[in-house]
Image (tube, rainbow, N blue to C red; front, side, top):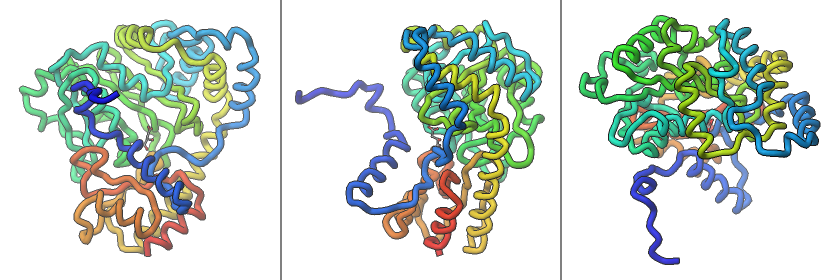
Length: 385
Ligand code: MLT
């Protein structure tokens, strides 16, 4: 049918970064051109066997073949509660403070629909996960970019947010361990964030998808910070921790009112998470801690090899503190991060993610994901010579 127009809402959307990169990968595949893919945070490592076995067995159970309750199964919520207590020493009520999600992205993007009116402002980190901008636009809100700069250790400088913006802002997205900069946030900083949000009545959407992908210092939950429970909802994902990206399962937790608001949106949008996936998720959280320890070791070895290889090649500004990304200042000979990504793709057959794709303050950087085997990373380093 000719003349079908996109809504104004969707026409304002920038193309989704990883869908665009995926298109380029498909073009290469169609031409049977081999390439090294270090673009998206989708690890090559298999999901724990116990999780798969649980999924298989649970999918044969008739009740799991029916609509799932939209607030998630009690079994999964109880597993989340126990994991959270053990990991962060934070007690959550499984009935009012935990909401399973079809992946943390789903919850992060639906969340503003519950609380933000058209025309209001949402504070988003730049560079930052592209979904935050999309979430603001879906809600008809105005995204305000908070720069994450190397000189501030990639922590958003709250003092620089103008008073007029603070007063209009309804929500703030924040994410540490940070994608893409790999930064961790110290307790002192998170305490300032909570104080700031409480003072200006800003809801904090704290994306903690990478909480288990650390190598030195253990990341915090925002809910460990006094007062956070009044204003924050924290988002977790099983994707990165248990290499379950395709399962689409995560959760939100924190303030009971905010949990209920998100549930109200979700109950109008989806019909719950496949029960067998929730059982698999419960197995991951309650029985797979050894797997996570091993995963961290593997990722650390990859990171160390890749970072020292980059240093030998003359890259001198490299950030690889946490998460499985390596965030690198592009050499001066490239005019932009897009130029460098194009060069890597066309000349070296390496697919990496240009910093600009994460927002304007990501310009000048490129991101490599340590989601391929060490031999592949070594091959990439050779190609970069
Ligand atoms: C990324 O590569 O930045 C993310 O892993 C993509 C995602 O989680 O959707």
